[in-house]
Length: 390
Image (cartoon, rainbow, N blue to C red):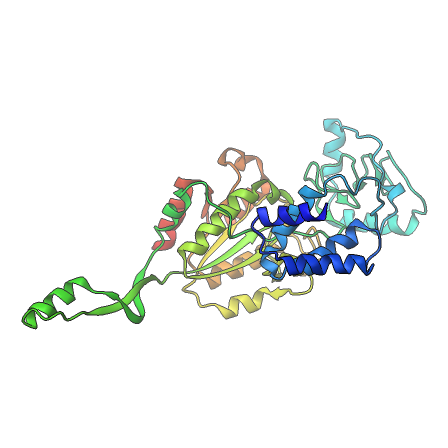
């Protein structure tokens, strides 16, 4: 079984070796872990993967190879599983939905604090307590247009204004094979060439002239290689609704890394707040203050946001509006600071243009960006690069 797992990793072009595989077998023989799929996952990653850049690829191989092995294993943590068991789902009438949407941000947060103090047991199917399958703004697997999600596996209707559980996101794979060269062609519109470095490229015209002036004796002339000197700061939304666009963003990320020599990238979720991160596996332990990022790079960097701008309006306009933590300042304030620090900026949105008018948050982001939002299409990318080239 494990030898096939080893070959599966090799087939996925993970740089795993036989000594590492033998080390994994030795650890299993010595019973360094218990009979747990979760513990085996961490042991295999620790012994077989030596570079964090391959963590995401390993996760995909592990998930595909061991799919179904974890069935029947209780992996629940934190909130009791019996509170969160999904028995049914309910649909709201337009009148009920309108009433629930009328609940303001402050009311929502004050109410959940009160319920957490009062509730003592599991509840399901209602409209008041923290539970499952109901119309309460608090819980899992229910139906509410603007609630707080607690203990639910993945998003369903994407209407939660805050998510109680810590979520893990994956880095975008910058080595993905591009199915088309169109993205690279579009990005090449953003270029500013200069000759830099040591003279290592043949200057044919100068060589011919120097040779002729030297009575036919070959006189080779070299010049520094031409490089694209454009500097790009790439901020990418990850997780949540962006899961639908992973392949598109990975193509763009791969193309950007090959086209721009001076490329810096960071991740954020939904909207930029007071910190960003470089590695999604360490997003909680290695936070990078946004102020530090602003101070680190000069204003000659071209700032490109990549995100679907699909979120609750609270996340942009409200202090404490982040779906994951209580941010002291609204996202709109941080977007304003970033666009002021880097005057040449654009927002690339993978969502189809046809849905933009129906997403309130997209309209807000468009306004904050001064209508510098472009679709992630060939024409959209070309338009964005032309704007950034000015």
